[in-house]
Amino acid sequence: MTQEDESPERPAIHVSLAPEVDEHFFEWISFGAEEEGIPCRLEDADESGGEADDVAALAYATAKNSRFGVGVSVTSGKVAVHERHMPAAQPVIVTEVEEDYARQVCRMAGSNAARLVIGTPLRLDDKL
Image (cartoon, rainbow, N blue to C red):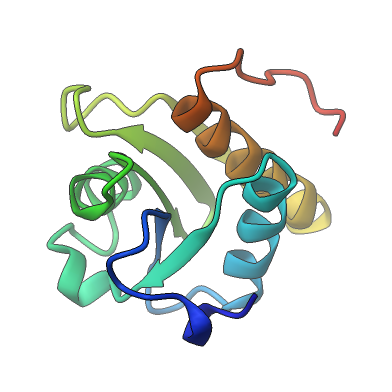
């Protein structure tokens, strides 16, 4: 299912990308979440309400906008998974995104975001 096919009312993990981040990062996050059976929706970073250069603030604002209460954000160099009941400055997971491992890190972030939704243990190793 493509992003355009999804209704705004359909529950999904919301994902925000800082303006300088390539949209492929969303695809990789979405793959990880969808492997766990949870859809994602790309949210405009400007509309989410978070600071585009602060990965925790952006993820928190994105989580607040999601019906699942879970959001993921990517800024240059970092990806964060946040849950709306956590303090704004304390995301569940923040990971450095190194160029050679960007796909794997984003996929893991999507998988962990979905695991927050379904209530299964997070994956903290680097193997998917």
